Length: 144
Length: 144
Image (cartoon, rainbow over all chains, first blue to last red; front, top):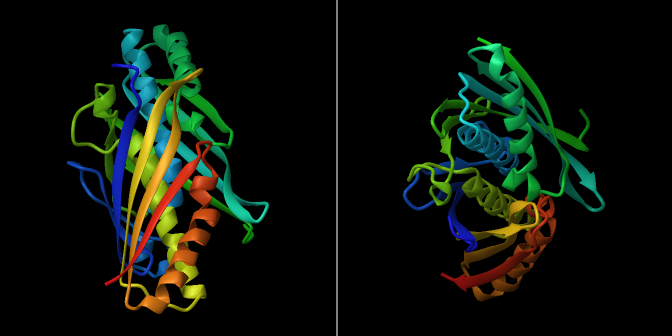
């Protein structure tokens, strides 16, 4: 991994109403829409969904990365993220994201390391750190 | 919940390796992973993709809202989002976002309206307003 900036190009093409087709070269397309756009459009991902999702996904990827570096294994990882949209000044902003992560582990021995991996993942989350709003992390580690 | 606050809930579920599922109630499931730039697999949507994507889709829906308020039609809309991720003090962050938007209208007299709607969409885009990095807009309105 070099220190050069990395570029992430995406393309969005309007398909009617408030819906669009979102493409990233070589990856599956994502249809976008808004809840107020009728039953069809409401089924597609909204910009707010994608924004909150990007933070939750980055947290997961960071966690996976740190468990690899620490050479520890886990059985499952699940994270719920709730983003709050509020009026700030004259426009709307996402003012907070609350994450709740649940990690399943094989035995008690790894609990502390998993806690540490979760902490590091939160601290070094590229996406969370690119957002203005605070991101909180509640964690729950269970032996499965 | 009042009109002044909306909440968005998303779930990520780890599957294996660096791959997981993004789950949002009532919407299609999206497979996600670490981006290939950070040693993830090729061809799967990454959080970095979605971060940039959330900005493009928000710009589009905001643009559509302004065209409705201003009572004019447009023929097509497409937006390319280019996010730049760079190393800063605390790991990587998005340091800039470039949104290149092309709108097609039917006649010359709609050009200035479409330009204005794009300007307002950029100003009131709640997703880019929730990001730390500056957003640069390059807008092109053509008669098609």
